[in-house]
Image 1 (cartoon, rainbow, N blue to C red):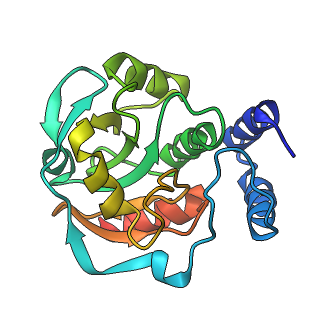
Image 2 (image 1 turned 180 degrees about the horizontal axis):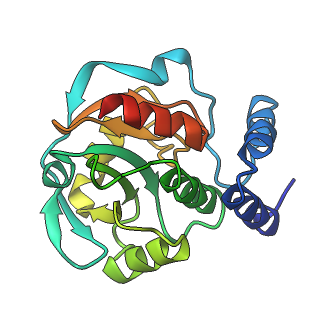
Length: 208
């Protein structure tokens, strides 16, 4: 079974654009019952990804950002088309791959700021992911303007999991999905596990 060092190597490969090979390998491991460290413990059913119907309004949850500011999740999302990933900075398995995916994605979004498109890395470990840790996460992946990171208040973590991981075991909140949110701060799409950067870019551009 691959270890954390190999998974770090795969994150580097992803940053170079070699995503399709990685995705096939990880999905084969998941479907074959071989769990790599940090990967979801179940394969999604068709009911767990695709369009969200009816759309779900994001609740007004308190968050802290990488620059130390506080804001509600609704305020962060309103007026922007957003791709959101769940992560935590202490993860050494799948989260670096998620970060590299967003790094690749930014290069596929022409005029991102002018189009009011943003990327949001939302932590599922608010006890550890303070502004310093979130800022280091963004620097690690050379995030450009339009990619932000935030942690919800600890009391709101259950609501975050319930909203984005609907239909999946609530204890299994370490997701490889990406969530698309419209300018009205409504969740409208859940991708399948391990989407390609191109898939996410196309969805974002359709929602603008």
